[in-house]
Amino acid sequence: MIILIYTMVFIVPDIFTSLLDDWQSGIEITTIGLMIVTLSTWAFFPLFRMDLRLPRDEPIRFNRARQKVYFYEYRFDRLYPFGSKGWGVNPVAYDWADLTAEVYRVYAPMGYGGLIENVMISVRKAGTEEVIERLFLCDDIEQGKQYWALARLYMQSGYDALPDSISALQDQKVGNGLNPMRYLAPKVRWPAEIDLESRSAPTTGSLLNR
Image (cartoon, rainbow, N blue to C red):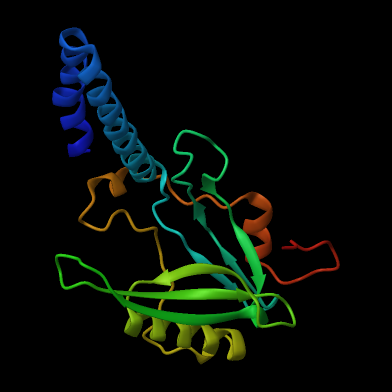
């Protein structure tokens, strides 16, 4: 956002001044200026749109009766920041048997030390080892281990097998205390069909396919 504001306040006026004073050099400055404006806009608006529209939470529902897992996934596409395709909530469901957890630990030039940890849930194509999708679980490996262990325990043995210290979440998170936009984030609203299916046992009716 800082780069975008700087561009609009300083670079855009310089472009017009250069075009009026010296057309030849003005073309070169205009080209550079337009590239900066384009890159700044492309970098800024997807992040701004995510701040406005990213749901308050992205819950995962584990349905032991159906042996399915439901993800309230938010998709975004930085290449098309102004379009509707590739953006928005897209709940998906997968068979528990096709899921596994993956851990990533990489170092990057960051101000807080550079260590990035992610725990992802990978979805394998049924009957194969081919991974067809990866979904975010958490950004802390130890916490991810605990989450995954609880998920496996519940899906294999049921709710009664969980530790007594585990209690059901009563309300959605309001914000993380860091980003004020999170307090304005849309609440989680599952589509009615998926909401019903993810909370119920299988029947003779049709099930959600993915």
